[in-house]
Image (cartoon, rainbow, N blue to C red; front, top):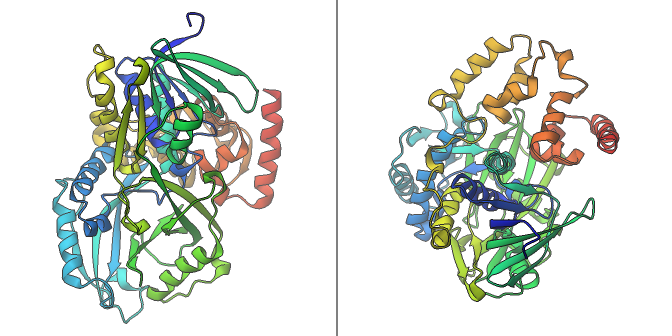
Length: 502
C-alpha cells in the first residue's frame, strides 16, 4: 500500500456533516480527502427548510438538551457566516383548537432562555387585528406571538465548509462515489470513481468517516462490508415555492390540525417557501419528489390561516428531501429525534466513524464532537477551533452585515442594488474575487439574465466545483427562480459549450 496516497481521514459524503467534518479536521492539521457521489449538497443538505433554529416544536417531545445546543449554535453560526445566515422574525397565529395558549407561551419562554440568547430579540405577544403582522391573517385569529430564529442558505453553507476545507489542504472529490473501502493491514484502502470521467483513484486512510446521510447504511454494508446495530429512519420532507403574498420581511409559523407546524418564509425577495411535511419514506433517496397530496396538504395549511387563498396554480416549483434521522423507535415521524449518534467501529485496527442523524443547525458541533471521538488515533492533531472561525466570506468586522452593505455600495457604486445584494448575500467579503478589476457591468462578462453574469459562473467553476448548469442555477445560487425558461435553456447551452471547450 506504499504506492498510493496516504491520508489521515477519508470522509464519505459531501453534505453538511461530511463537509463540516472535513473542514474541522483539515483545520487541525490532518490530511483529509472528502468524496461525494454527486454534487456537493445535492441530497438532503440543499432540500431543507433553510433555517438555523433550535427547533421550537422539539420542546413538545422533551428534547431540551437538543434545543439548547441548537440555540447556542444558532448564535455561533450567525457570527461566523453573517452573509448566508441572518435573523428572521416568525409570527405564530394562535389557534385555540390546537395547542393551548399557555403551552405556546411556555414553549416560547423556554426557547428565549434555554440557549443564552444574546443577539436576537425575544418573544412578544401580538394583537393580530391591530398589529401589521396580522394583516394577512384571517380575522378569526385574533392573537399571536412573534419570536426569533435564523435563515440560512443551506447549500451554500455546505459549499463554504468545503471551500474552507480545501483551502486548509483537504482534497474534495465531487461526482466521485466511493466504490470500495476495505480494511488492509490496519488501514483503509479506499477507491473512488469519477462518474463524469471514469477515472479511479485510490487512497490509504487511517480513519474512515461515513457521513453519507440517507445512504449511511448502504456505505456501511455494501461499500465497507461492515455492519452496525444502529440504523437511520428515512423521513420525507417536501416544500413548495409560491409568489410572496404578504408585505413585510417577517415569516409565519402555523399549527395544522395534525399538530404539525408549517413554516411560511419569505424567499428570494418576491417568493415564499412553504414546508414541510413529515412522511416515512422507504424508496431510493435519489428518487424522492413531492407528491400531489403533500402539495395540497401545504396549501390547505396556509389557506386555513391566510386571507389570500392559494391554489395549485400558485405553486411555481416544489422540492423534497429525505432526512436521515436516527431510528429511536418512535412511531410518529414527527416525533423521531433530530439528534445525532456516532458509531465508532475499530475492527481490524482501522477505525470507521459512522454518523446517524443530525440537523443542519448542529453540524459544526457534530463535526467537533466527531473529532473528539477519533482524537485517540491522532494524538498530535490540533485543538477545537471552529467556534470562532468565520466561514469564507464571513470575515466582516463584528459580523456586521449591514455595515458591509454600506461598504459594498461605496466600493461598487456602478453595480445595481439587486446585484450587490446577490453578491453580498452569497459571497460576503469575497465579492472582490468575483468582480476582480471590473468597473462596470460590461466588465463582468456575458449577461445571462437576472443577476447572472459570466464572472460569477467562472468563479463557481474555478472555486466551488460547479460542473453543470444545475449546479450553478440551483445549488450554488437560486438564479433558476429568476430566469425565464428561455434564459435557463440559453445558459445551459452556453455552459455546455464552455465546459466542453475547457
